[in-house]
Length: 528
Image 1 (spheres, rainbow, N blue to C red):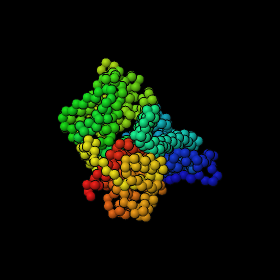
Image 2 (image 1 turned 90 degrees about the vertical axis):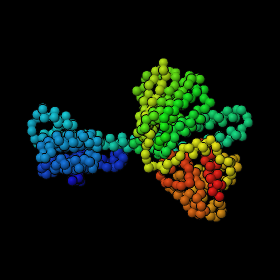
Image 3 (image 1 turned 135 degrees about the horizontal axis):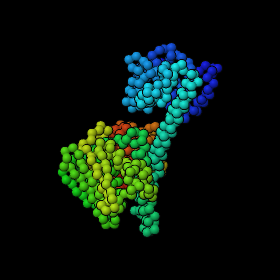
Image 4 (image 1 turned 180 degrees about the horizontal axis):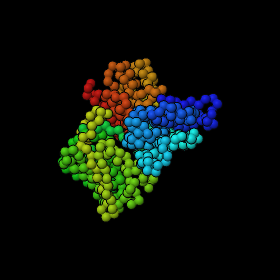
């Protein structure tokens, strides 16, 4: 392997790029030019012609050696001699086109023969973008290489800009959740106290708008996870699909459109319950929203097959506009920005794909719209320990007896602390508050406090994670302190496992927050 270094006199006359040129490209790596020839003297000669500090030159004396380099490095241009023993240039190019990593590497063939139209076409068929004929003209070689090196730099810059954009969106979505949590919590508790109709109306608007914003933030974060992580991560658990659907039915109870449920066959399986709830809520919500008032929306689950569930969500009314049908599952496809970002169906499709399933739709003005989903009955993963949806359903149906307790809040955002303290005090709990793990430790050690549970932010100052603080508090208190972890992303709960805990994303739904607290306090009372 050879890396060409330009000497101080810069004989090529080319501009030396500033450091900023490479910083914009992201990783700071030089573009790589691969030269493949079975004669060492040819490799030395071409490397000498191209010597500069704008790119790295790597050489190989055989097709097999070239393949090893191509699989190891990201190559901006491959200059390949056509005539080589064992594996000629055409064979090497064919192999390159069969591998995803090297499929789109530009190839320039070098040959000692005079231009032969038939052989040139063969080279273009196997992926060549250009030819060089021996003896090689130095200026021609430099010009061709410069073009592809420039294209590679531009490609790196675009990739880096895309990565930065996705990271910015993700961070923005995460940071918006703290103030939104305060807004929703304060609005919810103010509604319980407000008596004036005008004030109650204004608070209802705040709550509805905040909920819509929370859904948008969640969709943005999902989009970021999909784009940066290559798809949604799922956490399957054993479940009864009927129970999942019944939760959706409760969500849409009292709407103008009637939801009809139909079950057939076995409903048992393993899925990511939260994601399936998100999928069905979105599809049923769309069906209800686009149905005439009073029209029926049907949700049918066919569990006759041993390996699959077939799910149909159908509504009446006008079909999907023809202009949207081809891009219905694409991000930002919706033409109505007042209703959302146009990410709902895109994320629905990603949820189905993450489970190994398929989704399609049929739509016309006469019959309405039907979304049809095939979902594998069992989807395995090691990301999440099994949970039983029957327990969750029973908890919702029969909430535990109300109990009051001492609750420690740990969050570096003062607005979140204040709003949670107001909420929990109103609920009859005694509240302790700390801005970070050290302050929480001092409350326990110096204040000799014994909280019944802790509500803690996942991301605390100085890179400290909430689960680590909980473990420290448990050691100090010498008991398994229940913990409710709040964070800007659902995936946070999986990074650091924590027993006897629950996880809610910000902004947390107030009713679910209170139910979770009551559940932990009731369990603690039973153990004692």
